[in-house]
Image (cartoon, rainbow, N blue to C red):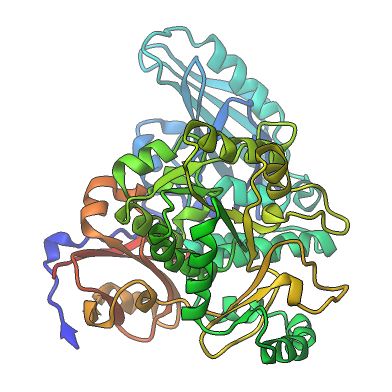
Length: 551
C-alpha cells in the first residue's frame, strides 16, 4: 500500500454555505436545488413554481447561489432574496438573467402591483423586475452582455413577459418527464448528483415513465459498474432463467460455438481477414461491451482494418478526436463512460482512423448511417472498417415489430455483406467471460431474434485490469480530511490522466469513476502507474477535493 502525502496547494476545496449572513433567515434555504427544466420552462417542485423563458435562453444548471449573491450584493431589493436560477441568451441581443425568490409571513402579504420595474440602469445595462404573488416575490434581473447593443428595450420587454408566465400553482407532475431532466443535465458527469435529480423528480409513476427512469438510471450508473444499485438493476432474472438451459445445451455442441475469449478473438480475426466490414453492437449501459470492442482492436488491426466507425461519436467530432488522440466531453455522450474512453484511446494508439457516421437531422437515420459508412469505402475502395454501433442497428434482417436497420441498408447499397455480431441479446455468465455463437447453428426460438451472423454472450467483469497489465497498476491510499463532514454519505470519485486534465480540465474524460460510501477519511483505489488527478464531489455537485497524484 502506497501512503501519499498531498501538497495542500494542490487541493481545491469548495463548500457552499447558505446562511443568514448572506440571506434573510426566512429565505435562507437554497431552493435552486429543487429546480427542474423542460426546455425553456423552469419548474421548482418545492415552491410549486413554473416560469417560462424565451426560446433563446439557456439555463446554467450548476450555477453557484453564493457567487450570484455576491455578484448582486449592491442591489438593495435583492438583499434578502434567494438566488433561484441563472442563465443567458444564445442569440443576439445577448443578456444574462438572474431569478431570485423571497417569501413573507402569511399574515403580511405585500400589497403592491403584481409586476413592477424596480431598476432601469443604463450605465450598467441592467433592469430589475419584481413580481408579487400573494406572500411571495420573484425578482428578475436582466443584464446586457452585448457590447454592440446599448438599448435595454428587449430586456425590458422580455423581463415583463417572463414574469407574466410565473405561477405558484402549476402541477409539475403533468408537465415534466425524466428525459427532460436528462437532457437538461446531460453535460454533467457527477453521476451521484444526476441520480438524485432523477430519483427526487416530481414525476407521476406509470409504465412509460418508470421505463424511462430505469433506462436513464442504468445509463448514468454504468459509469461505476461496481455500484450495488447498478448491479441490482442490470440483472434480468426472467430472461437469464429462460436462456440458461438453451445456452448450456448449445455450448455443449462444438459446431458454430467458440467458448473462450481467445477462440472468440481468433475467430473474429479470421472472419476479418476475408471480409471488408465487421459490425459489432452494444447496449448503451453495458461497459463490458466496450471492453470486448477494445480487445478486438488488436486482432482486427492485424487483419488489415484501419477504420473504426463509432455511432456514439458526434457528427464532426471525429476530426478533433483523430487530431488529439484522446476523447473529450464534446466527442460524444456515451464516449464519456471510462471504458468507452479507454476503447477510443487504444484505437488511436493502434493507428485507427475514427469516423462518426450517425445523423439525427434526417428522415431516415438508418439509411443515413449506412450511406455515411459506405462513403468511406467509396473514397477508399480498399478500406476495411470496424463498425461499433448501438443496439439493433446491426440487424441484417428485419426483426419482428421492427423496421429496416442500418446493416440491412448497408448491404443493399454497397453490395458488401458485413459480418454482423450482436452482443445485446444473450445474457448469462461464462467461465471465460465470452462465448460466440454462429447464428445458423443457434436453436430457433421465438424469443431470440437471430438477425445477425453471430450472437455473442459477454459476461466480462469491468475493471482496469482489462486495459492495464497487473504490474502497471498500483494500490493507493488517500487521506482526505474534508470527508469527515460526509460520514455515512455517498461521494462521487473521478480519476483523470494528468496530462489530459491539465490540457482539457472539465472537458476531460475520466478513466475510472466510483460512487463511494464514506466511512472515514481514507480512500483506497487501484489505479494505473502514471500521473493522475482525483476529483471528489458530493451529491449536490460541490467539489470536495481535487488531488494530483504523481507517480
